Each structure stands twice: as C-alpha cells, then as structure tokens.
Length: 263
Image (cartoon, rainbow, N blue to C red; front, top):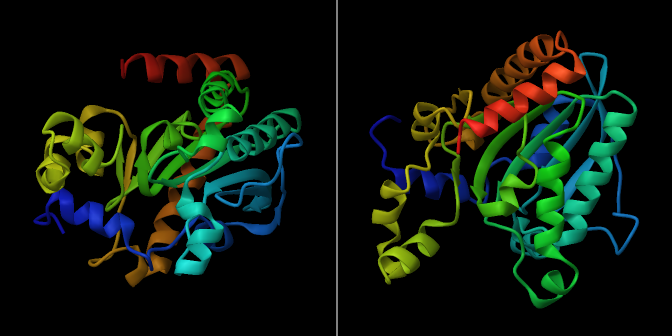
C-alpha cells in the first residue's frame, strides 16, 4: 500500500462500496438510536447521529453519510450536508455535553452543499458556529476521517481532542479538482494536485494534524471491514480511557492548544 500514489488514495476514499459512517456506527457501537432534525428547519440525511453505547458507556455518535448506490446517494445528497445537518449535529453535541457523554464523529464528505437554499439558510454561519461550539465543549471528542474530508464541510464536525484517519482517507481544504482549478487554472491536473496538497493520512500525521493512522487491508476498508473495526475499537477505547482522566478545564485547554499549533 505504501507504493500507491496520493491520487490512488483519493480514488479509494471515493469508492462507492467503501464502508460509510453507518457501517462503522453499527459495527462499533451497541443500542444505537438515531435522532433526527435540527429543531429549526428539517432533517438532513447527509448527517446521521444519535445515542449509543461503547463498552457499556453511553456516547453520542455523529457521521457524514454517503450512499452506496445512486438512489441512496441522491437521498443522502452525496454526503454534502446542508446547514440543518450541521445544526442537527450541534444539537446532539450540546445534548451530549449536558448528559456528560463523549462524542465520536465520522467525517466523509466532498464538502458542504453549496446550493442557493443552503446559502440562504446560513451555511457559512452553521459551519462557523460548530467550530466555535466544538472548541469549548466540556466532554471528550474523538474525530475519525473515514473517506473524504474536504473543506469546512468536514471541519464542522472535526474539532476534537483526538483525530484519526483511515489509511486511505484524505483530508484537505478542498478537492484535488478544485485545487487544480484554482492553482493551475486546469481541473484536469487533479492527479498532480493530489500529490501537491499533502492530503493523505501519512502527510497529515507527519505534519501533526492527526494523531493516528488506522490501517486498512490492501484494496481498501471494504475488503475487510472487520479488521478496520477492530483497529478502530482499540483506538477509541484507548483514547476514551486517556481523555476521561482529564478535567473539563484540561479538555478544553488541551483542545485549544492542539488547534493553535496547527496555525
């Protein structure tokens, strides 16, 4: 797997049959109860979330959900959340804080939905609000990039104490196609852009942006999801054990310093 290019990893991250957020939620947690709606506009199916248990511990889980078939992808808006999706996520996170539940998020989106309706309903504000609120939540937050993690649409649920990436996931300010269009004035240079962007798990681990790379089987997570679930379960268990020893003040201060060092 070490010989494959950054563009190869982009293609693996985008594979239709790659495990999605709900696959990981159902595989890692027990008693998952999905909660719906932002209590303001509606329910966004591009973001799923609710309450579950992890090794008997109540947790809140949230994920950006793509589809595995064309019809499901349309229903999930190809994993591109509207503002009501981010507001639903924030509602669940604030609820988690109220009841002292750790939060685990799964990031997989090509970006926030850029439609006119989304902009009219405050897409930018919804993302910014999540960044602001997540930075000061007084419960442990573990974020895992499972596929594409692009732009503010990914970051809106990725301000955490621990950040992990699957080996073939990518995490960047925008897609390689968008990067190539802006920097090279030619979207056909996306393959070149993918390497220049340094968006792979190895790159981001080297930069100190993420804390852990979760190994995948050759060919991608869909080839042996049980292997990936085992790795993830071990990582989440270890991270929660560490984070649960910290006071509320230490959690918030450490999270602040973590993201300040990235600037």
